[in-house]
Image 1 (tube, rainbow, N blue to C red):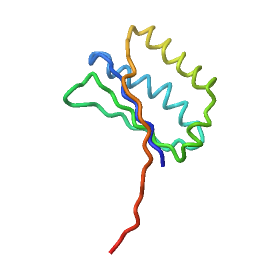
Image 2: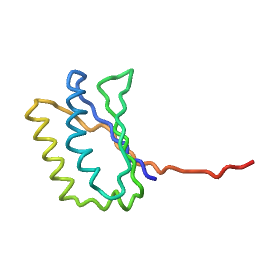
Image 3: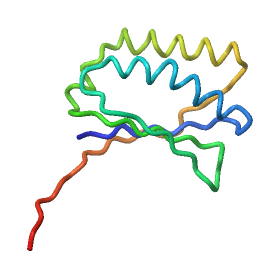
Length: 106
């Protein structure tokens, strides 16, 4: 399994709308993509302007098989909705992790 980790900065007063529309637009799209296993939204208790999205993929190959054209369309749609709602957000972090599983040893 591979983890896509994204951090965004959004004003706290807009946080719930950002999360709601992220689910409606991005998560809905990702749910149709082969290899998508799920997504979690994390809020930092010490800094509620930070939103972390943790996206689980079956394999990196399936994740990276999404066409840039499709990603651009979804991003443009999401950005248009954010602009319409006057919500500014900024991507402030990205990481990729491989989930390792270890055999049980006595």
